[in-house]
Amino acid sequence: MKHAELAAFLKSRRARIRPSDVGLPGGPRRRVPGLRREEVAQLAGLSADYYTELERGRGAQPSAQVLAALARALRLDGDERDHLFHLADRPVPPATQGPNAHVQPGLLGLLDRLATTPAQVITDLHQILVQNPLAAALIGRPPAVRGPATSLVYRWFTDPEARTLHPPEDHPHHSRVFVADLQAVAARRGSDTEVARLVAALRRHSAEFAALWDTHDVALRRADHKRIVHPALGLIELDCHSLFSEDGRQRLLWFSAQPGTEGAAQLELLSVIGTQEMTTTTVGADGLERPKP
Image (cartoon, rainbow, N blue to C red; front, side, top):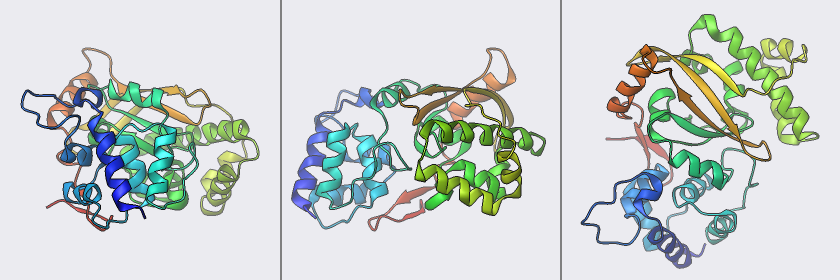
């Protein structure tokens, strides 16, 4: 691993980003060009100490997950993101697949501007790539898992905990929507091993999924009305909207409520509550997630 080169590259990318580019206040007393180290750490979901070790070239060994988070925080383009992985001696993951996929710049730029509404970018297999703070406060951070469980569709049909986000009477609707959407994605991708593995795993582990899959209903989820069970605010009724990337592999999702409704008032309160209860973990110097002190 090229520690010194990695450290220099991170410093150079950090220096070119204005705080306003990533939704942070500028302030008159900034002593460094671009972002501070702790701001990059915050944007990437890392501990400040761990990121500082990376910039000092002290021997930290970042995982692929950490590198992907840094690429998003530093707004790297595709070539820069690949270079970051090469410097860390990590295999470059496919640009459009999996939870470490590189967020398409157009979607990331729009996400940066959605500071007052919950929003996130996901893959077409419902793997969360990046969230704004309000999305994390509304639906929580994705769990630190690997394999098929990185997909919310897989967790929905195999992990009862994934369904607690919605009232039980809404579960059949969400199940149908997930399966119809996955059918459309499978058709669009064609002979794609990632989709085939996910479908095979779901058919093995969920009779409900297998039965719905065999109905052959097909419909991309472009918009939906959702009822979300929030631990502090109770039941919140919101509209969920989707904007698709050109290749259909990524989606920008955002939540809204009609003005004057209870849902709109709850979103206002959510912005006050912030992410105090939701951001309870940090990544330590060894790259592992732990509860914040």
